[in-house]
Amino acid sequence: MNQQYRWRRLATVFVILFMLLFMFVYWGWPSEEKRVRNVLSEAAEAVEDEDLLELSNIFTDDFTDDSGITREDWELIVRTGFKVYDDIEIRVSAVEIDIAEDQATITFNASAQGTYVPSLFKGGMPQVDQGSAANVALLLEKRDGDWVVIKAERLPLHFIPNEAMELLR
Image (cartoon, one colour):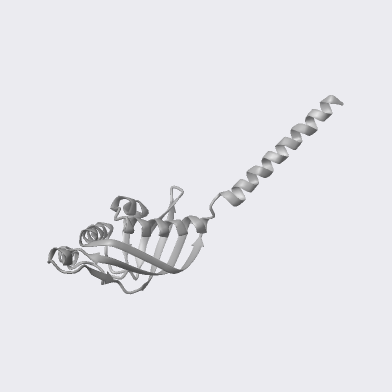
């Protein structure tokens, strides 16, 4: 009788542990959609923090956009943008996510605003550049278990500082 009681107790403990593990995985483990959405949040936060290193970790080395900008060009644009804009704010809305195995697409409306730094050096009032909203698409791929951006479509190029455009020509 004592042996049978131990087995029941052991089986009960295993069932409880299995149920707790299942609940953790089901509710505690982020879904693929949440992980993809986090990439967008991390990118927006990195821009606001002017953190090129964090932003670069989100984009692949073979990144391109639909107008032919490579990752190297993109980093130059962003670095120059961080030099000429301060207090950058990114607003994202109407986020739609489509996931198919190891590929995902995020489409969203984005707008940015920032203080144009050169206006401060001219002795003038700070100029706040209110970028117009754009509908952007990011194509992501799951590599080594992480979602990373491989391509962008419809990135608004009107925000690119003239200084960066001159360097790209």
